[in-house]
Length: 323
Image 1 (cartoon, rainbow, N blue to C red):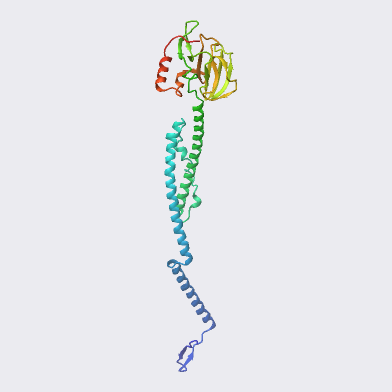
Image 2 (image 1 turned 90 degrees about the vertical axis):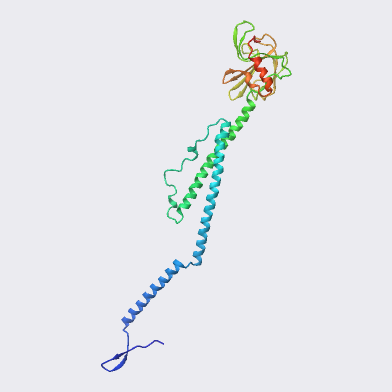
């Protein structure tokens, strides 16, 4: 029941009932509603600032989990970066040195992350710096991993080439030690057996009985097996790749034809005395990039240190060659 208010009328000496005009009622109602709205909004604001709703609690918990997740990711990326730096050092200082390849410059490994702000879209958030830092570290790590992956692919190719080179390069004597009578003449200036004049001897002469087996000293392809080269008589030439060619002269007969692929140790022919030859022997040459070089440096595959030392001694003696 609404309260009724009265006022005292001094003229009539009586109490009269207070009656509000409609306009006053509206005014008072508006003031009441406005005050109520203000007080209600103030209460809501205070509750929003100091009292968390269930949804706010969930969001806050998710934000804390996200921060922890970013910290863990950043820690893992730092560990991965340390491992990658170790691989990069081994790549430059071991792998590339062994395969005679140039190291990858440091500026190339870390290029492409300066200048334009590529992370501008991540600005304006409460945790922008944390997100930008993690994103940048991930980008740097990803690029360095890509570069290192390409480098290791190159190392694999170099290793395969190195394996092929080691199998192809001349590394053994063309005549087995059991069949070898002696090393008659080495590389260098020697006396010509026919003119007696000093002449450059571009190979090594191995004396053995006619028909002694002659073996390929490395993997390769037979590019000549004929007697059409002056002085060599029946001879074989093998292209080993990588700039190396070996020549086997004064043969009595062939065991391979032009175009045949051979491996180190394959039987390719037999000792003879065809061409410009004084007696049965094998004239053996090693050529690198079309230039004759001393074959004595290529017998590491089947000579002991003492045998190699004796070979060097015999090869260095000046005497008469057999061709």
